[in-house]
Amino acid sequence: MKYQFLLFDADGTLLDFPADMTEAFHRMYAAQFAAQRPFRQELLACYEACNNRAWARFERGECTKNQLYISRFVEFLDQTGLTGDPEAVNASYFTALAETGTPYPGAAALVERLCQAHKLYIVTNGNVVSQMPRLRHAGLMEYFQDVFVSEAVGVGKPDKRYFDYVAAHIPGFQRENALVIGDSPSSDIQGAVNAGLDSLWYDPPGLNNVKSDAFTYRVETYDGILRILEHV
Image 1: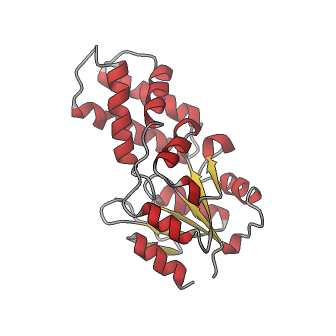
Image 2: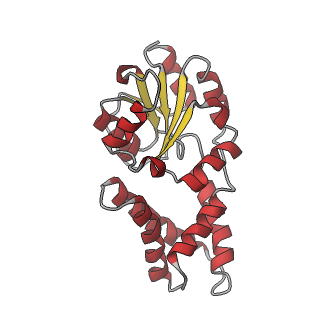
């Protein structure tokens, strides 16, 4: 068995973030903005675009995590004409997000099987307030040795320093025996490259509109993950 340590991304790999984000946004909007304007679907689309741009800035190292969180709502308020305190809106959103936790079908079965022969860890760019509750609500926490949330680390994927921190805090960690498993080429796969780690790009059809050639392995299904790990 080549890979003793499996470093799993959470959102987009094990957790259905679009479903959780949508639910959290609806709850936040009801609490913060319903008195100003009835909800319309284009408001959610506007937030998603603002959020994606903020995350792209973070992954390029152009802003801190807290700047990411606040700037997306500053932009959202500016584009929609809604009024509010971006920090209060962000806090309301995270409170709502912490109440979600939707695993993809088969995610629990996958990690339950893998934890019998491997040591599993979560490597996530999520936030401390919501990420741990979501993993618990999804029924996944029991299968992982530890969870490394970038907000607590102080730096996130794809920064090499994030993975150096992870490596330093896993007992007996050896880079040649570790595999990063995630859906994001810019965060998970590039992070693995930066840290000198092998990677498995989980790339279900229709999930990503980007291409990558930096991965060690690529699969489209959870069964594909199992097949790779059974033969290396």
